[in-house]
Amino acid sequence: MARLIVRGGRVIDPAAGFDAPADVWIEDGKIVGVGADLDAAGAGEFDARGCIVAPGFIDMHVHLREPGFEHAETIETGARAAAAGGFTSICPMPNTAPVNDNATVTRYIVEQAERMARVNVFPIGAITKGSQGEELASIGSMRNAGAVAISDDGRPVMNARLMRRAMETAASLGLPVIDHCEDLHLSAGGDMHEGIESVRLGLRGIPSASEDVMVARDILLAELTGARFHVAHISARRSVEMVKFAKSRGLAVTCEATPHHFALTDAGMIPYDSNFKMKPPLRTAGDTEALVEGLASGTVDAIATDHAPHAGSEKMQEFEQCPFGILGLETAVGLALETLVHSGRIGLARMVELFTSGPARVLGLDRGTLRPGSAADVTIFDTERRWTYDVNRSFSKSRNSPFHGHRFRGGPVASIVNGQIAWALD
Ligand SMILES: [Zn+2]
Image 1 (cartoon, rainbow, N blue to C red):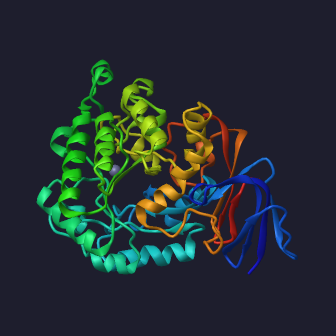
Image 2: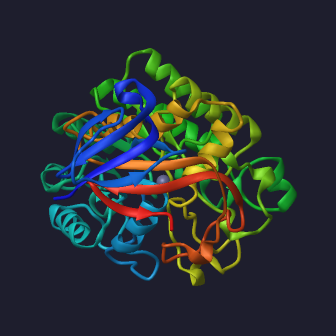
């Protein structure tokens, strides 16, 4: 296998406490060393001058739509979009058809990813059979087939007794439980955040309480069972406060925030544009403020995209009819730089942490650092590069993004996966 030196960048590896100009030496898919003026005879070189060189970014929440919805995305196209977005590892949620609720589907995803994906794919298995919320899925066998967590994402587990059993099972297997926290009775019929804006637009609302009550319930169940509990796409101020409280009590509770939830608000959405429809919905400026505070302080552990491709025909319907979810992989780094770093709210090292060792820790993945011996996953990005996002040139099969035409300052330059360049800016 080839040797590669990533030359002349500013290397930021929060897990190792490293932030300095350095070269990264890669051999046989592993990091050999990080240091000044490395000289490895016969090695290829990647010129990273002027760039940040970081451990490979991990997106712990994506939807790849395969098997079952390949018209919207496949493992191959989703992985291409990931690489172009600076991600070297992605974790697909189980809401495929069939649902990833048993080892056969898990193995299919793992094998298809080995054949087709340019990035690492770590699947997330379902909590319940068919994600129907009635009977536990085959959690142990999915873990043995490669699942790194369980979740019924897209849906919550409404039955608290079943969630308790899921947490007990997951705890005994060492897996985290990721919940899409939404009380379906409270959110029923809603299309956007319930508040002044939903009244103004005449759309049915989804109250923050629909998220908050489930976060509260799950924190209590995590305390009862000792399970590792992770809140997917946290969006509401009270939920962030409760995660902070749970952490202060020493519970193994973590959460992730998406770029659209910290960058956009309900007041800023283009009315009735389906590219602004997602679950949880865009909330208020007070909520985004709480997310940014949480990202800065450590209450929020990871930035995850919830990349949710939908074919054009599905998203072209009226606002009330169209499905929830937007693309996220190719705009995440640009949005994080713009909203968090260039605004002065968090430092670059903290941003890198939220994309690397943060999610790695939540999932117990042996990734997210450039320490010698680690898998050679490297993300190279430029904090100043000016570029415009053209969704029609996306590597994704779908086009549902509210950021089409957005002008970014800073973005990914290259993604190296297991020592191979998976994508580089041309
Ligand atoms: Zn979800």
